[in-house]
Length: 176
Image 1 (tube, helix red, strand yellow):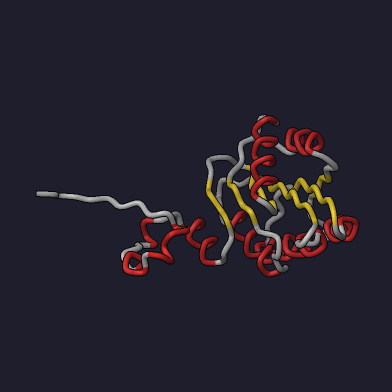
Image 2 (spheres, one colour):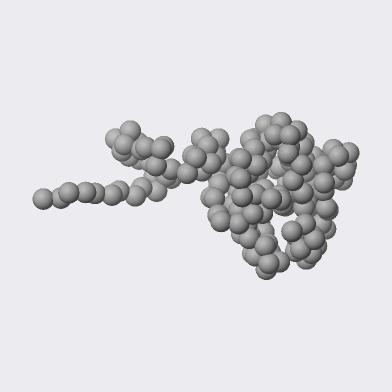
């Protein structure tokens, strides 16, 4: 006689198991992870205090490594994706800012499909909507990076710019 059972499903396989989708209980999931999944944002909550907004899983992993090497702890893995809009970036940042452990935010964007000015506009939009002034460390590289830096510089938000991964590590040390 079985008295209990637990079933773990890979979220990416649920489309093949529509019969099991109705068994999913959002109350058993992390609220922020559930919110991110509903917006098609790759997000995993971690235990640190540095909120990370990145585009691309590889860059996100490198960003987590740099954050940890700098003596800081990432609060999340978040890959906003390549084709994100201002609204999607703002939603992603809103998820980061909803984590009460986050004391600063690291933005590391390689502008290709996601232009740096779009990412910057989304971040500023979310900060204004939340009325939060947490310190930002920002690295923008690629398409419209200068425009993105200008958007941040003119936003009035507490921004420290980084040109490379070493600068990110140094800036994180200064914003702790």
